Image (cartoon, rainbow, N blue to C red; front, side):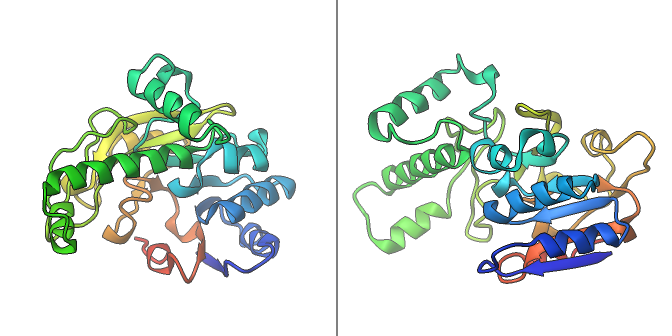
Length: 259
């Protein structure tokens, strides 16, 4: 395994991508912010490196990452999702999606309708509205924090069906369900079942995990609570060949978890 790091102030990560290719690795677990995700995808394509490429969810936007990186270069990427892909035509007649588009046109007309971050922000604001309503007349900091830690099966308009928000005083992570998705050159295509981190036992090989692998590879599961919201049930072959690119200030803890 070869691990390469970067700083958010770095102008480029080209040298890191070259190092990763030269290691002989055929699996790339890419944990980068959007700016560097674009660079990583482009550079890997430019130098002819074609690993099994897992991309963290925060850098999976079509508008801000995949298009700038190149749709052809991005084809075959595997990521995870918990939201409706706003560029996917299957949602064009979905009322919640249409409500979001109408909201964008009214309040943020200059905003890009292919930038998933805009849909994410809308969802966060919707959830905050729910928390404030749950607070009633007591809008003290203490009560807002209390209600934020007592959310149960909250459905948000742009979440995938069957994915809900849940928190508790001992678990502040609001979304612990995801589904694998593969970029087909135009859009993210979801596959496999929705994975619930609270119901997953480490080491379980699942239909969703196997579907992420080329047919000539046997699965070896990746586990760890620290990365459960990044790559749930992603199974890779030859863990010793797994490479990780991460920002050591942001996600170093996630990058080190391997079998």
